[in-house]
Image (cartoon, rainbow, N blue to C red; front, side):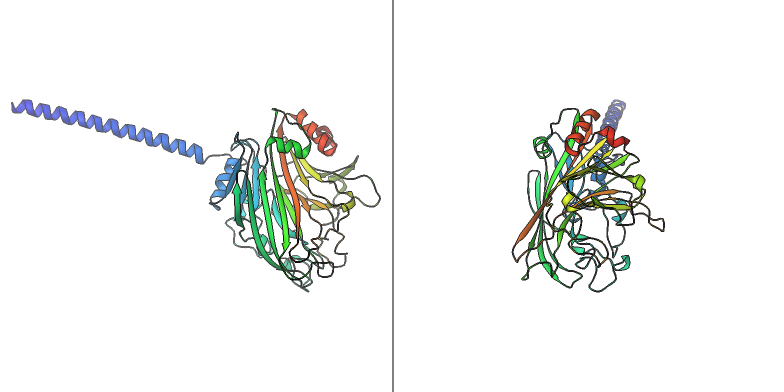
Length: 421
């Protein structure tokens, strides 16, 4: 009887042990499956993809806003914390290419007294940068790099999220700035960002898209309101809003800027940082072409009477067509941005483009390239507001379809763009 009971007890223990082992193994497999799923969902996106930048930026901005189309392919990242920037976008979901340039090394770096360049494919600055009404130099100092400081209000300070409704958000920032002429500007800057659907993209660009083209587009509305007691005029100086789009260059990337061929006088200012070499810039049939390879520092601008309301680029390596569309006033007074006080302050360009490259000491911030639009000088009475709209679009896919878009918007084909240099 005792032997029988011992045998029965032993059998129960074996069975219980087996059950425990089975349960433990099942739990282990469940845990491994969960960990694997979590890893695939939250990490391991290749560098250069949108998912990679989502994960990176969320480490520094837990309130980062991710706007997504219904099919999940078109997405943009917006950060009120980082000055209301649209950091980047994609046309093919998390695995798709990330179109904006992000300066990863800047996020852990100490605060720089001159500029904290976090990147972003659309950031909002105020101008002018240089000249007798500059916002970047204190009154009376020599306009050189040592004295150049980006105002903290749009360099490192956070903006306030006012609202979010669907794929449209609104942000605001109160600013109190002083220019080189010692004029104080009390203002409120407002910024709306909206992820556009396919129909809106087609309407804004007057193009027809097909299933062979993937696209993403967003629109920004940027306004500045005089909240002070004084009029902003040609004596006191006046600010302007300034949209700057930062993108990643390539060996076969070309900036495309159509211009008005009518009229007389120069088309472009090409000597901001010394004259741009002739082999890097071409004027052809009403279109300016500018190399965007990130290997030679140069900036240009189109004079206001010649400016059209579009510019862009084509990256032949990644097959990406980029378009920026913005407000233009061909009769408006635009602020001169040059770091000098001997030029007429309201003789500036109506839009700009920049290709990054090494400095004299061999160092380099990027590489990146920029497409920029500016508003005319904001000559405002107290309480008045000026608004500037700037939209960005990216297209990838069938080259024939992309070429048709380029021809419609820029007046040139992909073949002409790729062969211009």
